[in-house]
Length: 151
Image (cartoon, rainbow, N blue to C red; front, side, top):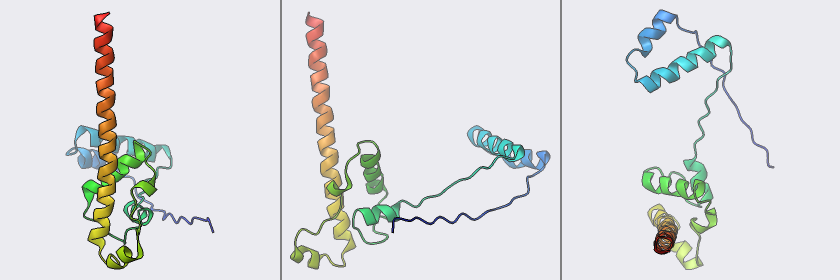
């Protein structure tokens, strides 16, 4: 319990010659060239450089109590959910699919689209609430600014 297992495969690559490296990066954008050069410098220095790819959609689906691959084609919804978690620290229980009653859960037993739609509605409600709070804050700021100008 509470143990995570991480397996990281070790890939060993031959470092290209300077001529081969220049030929390979010559067609890249300046930002990509800069990254490639920094990466090469780390290789030459003997530093260890690692890139970890963490699949977050399966974890989001589990957290929101959605079936596997429910968010696969829901790019905008996934981005909204991540923005709410990262930028606004919204607790997941406000967004997750919850089985309101036994009757509803029986009706939605295998209907992924309906479950995703319920999560989408929760996300929309929270985003609307945040937007409303921003508008109220903006109104208050304008009122304070106009009050300070009249003094």
